[in-house]
Structure formats: C-alpha cells, structure tokens
Amino acid sequence: MIASSGGQQRVLEAVQACRKDAALGWYLLLDGVLNPVSHFLLFFSFLHISKTNATVIFETWPLFGMLGTTLLMRAHFESLSKRSLVLGIVALLGLALVVWAGQSPEATTSDGSNFTLGTVAAAGAAIAMAMSVAVHVKARMIIGTLPQMRKAALTTNVLTKAITALIFIGVALVWQPWPEIAQIDPRLWLFILLNGAFIVSIGSITYSEALAIGGRSDVILLWYLTPLLAVIWLWLLGLGDITETLVLGGLFIISANVLLHARADDGPAYVAVFLTLCVAGTVIHLMPALPLRNFLPSTSLIELISLPLGIFGILTGFVLGRKFARQQEQEEAILDIVPRLSSDEMPYLEKTLRAERQSDIDLHFAHLYRSAHERTPDLAVALRRLRVKLGRSVSHGELIVLWALSIMTTLSVVFFRPNGMIGDMIVLLTVTSMTYLVMLMTVQSSPNLVEVSRRIADPMAAPMRSRIWDRRIAVLTISIVFAAQIILAFERDGVVDLFSRL
Image 1 (cartoon, helix red, strand yellow):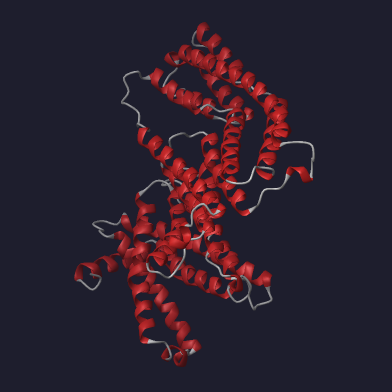
Image 2: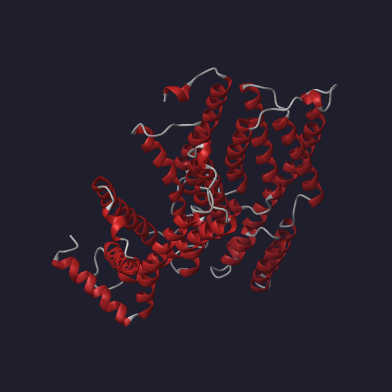
C-alpha cells in the first residue's frame, strides 16, 4: 500500500509541505527522535531499578500526554478538566497494581545500584513519550489539512518511522552490533518484525487518529487498558495467571475509563464513589482487620462509631435541607432573570453558576450586573436576590466537622471491621455512602442550574443529549465492581477457589 504510486505521491506532498512549513518538519523530526529516546531511557532504567518501579513511572506518560496535547493544540482540544486528571490518577493506581501483580518476588530487585539514575531515566522516558505523542498528533493535523490529502494518519506514521529508521541505522553504523545481531534466533526475528511492522504501527496509526479526529485529549487514558489486556491475552494463551491484585488493578482502570466516557453525572461526588469503592476494596483485601479489643478492650465497633455517625446524620440532614432549599431559590431567581438577558449576557450567567470558588462567582457576577442591572428595576432586584443566594450555604466550620466525623468513621470501619465478607460489605457501603454525602455538601457549584437557565432562555430548543445509557452503563459498572469485591472476599475466605480454576 505504501509502495503504490498514490502512497508515494502522498508522502512526497507531505515532504514538500515540510519545506513550506518548517514547523511541520520539526514536529516530524521531534516525533522520530523522541520515540526511540523514550524506549532507550526505559530500557536503561531497567538496569538500575526494578522493572515494576520503572514501568509504573514510565506509564505516567498519559497524564503528561493529556497536558501536552491540550497546551500544544488548544484550538482543537477542549480544556483539560479536573475530572480527567483525577481519573488519570485513578487509572495510574490501577496500573501500579496490575504491574505489581505481574512481578515475581525475585524480580522486584535489580542488580544495579544507582536508584536515582534509574528513576530519572524512567521519568525522562515518560516525558519523552508524552512529547512524542503530542507532536505526532500535531503533525497529523497539519498534514490532514493539505489539499486532497487522504490517509493522513498513515502518511504521518510513514514519515516519522522513516526518521526513526534512519536514526537506528546511524546508531548501528557507529556501534557496530553485527555479532550480537547475528546471534538472534530467526523465530525471534519473526516476532520483532510482526511487532514493529504491524502491531506497533497499527496501534500508532489508530491511536493518533483517535486524538486527531476527536476533541478530547483525555482519550489518552485508554492507554491504561493496554497492560490489563496484555495480561488477559497471556492468560488466554496459558502464559499467565489471573490474581487478586490483578483484578483489583483492573477495576481501577476500567472504572476510570467508564467514568471518562459515560458521563451519567458531572458532579465530583459521583466520581468519588467509584474511586472510594476501588480504594476501599483494595485496602480491605491487602490489609487484614485489626482486633478492636487490643486497643479498646471494653468497646465494640458499633459503640465506637455510633456517636460520630449520629452527629454526622443529624448535621447532614440540616445541611442538605438548607442546600436543596437554596438551590430552589436560585432556580426561582434564574426564572426571573434569564428572559430579560441578551444573548451576550448569558455566558456571564452560566460562568457564574458553574464557578466553584467564591472569588470566581464574584468576578463573573460583576460582569453580568454591570451589563444588565440598569435595564429594568425588576431585573436589578432579581440579580441582587440571585447574588445573595449564590453565597455558600454550608459554612466552613460545618464542613470541617462533617469531614472529621466521616474520616473517623471511615478509618474505624476499615481498620476494625468484622472478619469475612460481611465486614467487607459494611466497609464498602459505609465508606462510599459517607464519601458521596460529604462531597455533595462540599461542592458549591451547581452544573444543573446551567441547563435550567438554557431551557428557560429557549423553551423550544432541541432536546438535550439523553444520559440514560450513561446511567445504565454506570450502574452496571458499579454493580460489577461491587460484585467483584464480594467474589474476592469469598476467594480470600476460602469459600470459593476461583483463581485456581482459571
């Protein structure tokens, strides 16, 4: 396909474009150089630190990649949200568990002695890989704009791989590794060609194309599925085992990617439930319960948590009642304001409603008030009423008390839980419920009010995107995560012997 006249013509057009646009040439050159440099640093780090540590450090590159692609191509990608960063960290935790599960005890140490050098090399490999992905996507987007350019992804990949091949040829001529190359088994050469010519190339093409045609750089987080799928392939081929730690790491990675794409709820409390469920499940499976009688001989777990839970429940009832009442008052104020605003003033209102910090609320509201308060006296009154209702409905003192009570209860339930599956269920239900309630009361912004304001501004607008399938997928995912935790509890307690059968 590349050797065809059409393929040669596309490559020549891209090369000619590099002469006119020096930036494109630099992007292709950087990609061709950074990719092999990244792998060289990774393999070099294996000489000084364990493969587990080096791999986990290297696989932080998707986080750097999200930042790099967003900064390099702001006009193409939407701004990176806190949600994406949090989910990236969640997936990274899962990756650490997956890599840890795949290491044998004798492989956790290295013969090298320079730990700092190995760590720096692995971190450099991660940064180089992230930069390589960013400049590759940038070059792909520029080549895609050339007149009558088809298969821009393939053309970009051919050019960057050609540069990388020239680098390797130059290194080989200087290093002269011919005796070592001659000793490579022919079957190994077959795997090398298969991996380089097909697997890596196809993965690179499809991966960069997904970033180029989409508007979200957080698609990079799908990369964290790679080690999980690799272990599953090895298991299917009879070359690896499914372990408890591997399942726990897989739950992190799958949950992060589901939450990234199935947006049943944009609130942080929703994301916190998944994160807490995964973290709590990992802790209770890796750390045995502590006997409470060793610390408080005459106290039971119920007596220990009954007082903080009671205070937490009473305070939560008052706070949530006040918060929901305040939101209803905000909706009534918006109903009076939106019909009187112009299309230029609506963005100020939406930014005000979406802001999380009080300083940002004040800033955006000031722009809105200066622009619209002189229009009618009723509008000025409605704006002042909305400004009062935008104040924090939960005081910082109340939040400190709520967080302190929830942390005390969570730690007590986790450390002093009853043994067995019942204790695990108590931990999972208690910790996730308290996390959701605390996060719900902590967050000040109300994204739902933005949708309400848009509906008031245009009652005949097209129906908004339904989230019914997002919700179904989210419910299914959280059910799978919870069920997997229970199955792991049965496995740990000897009720079932699932992994030996696998």
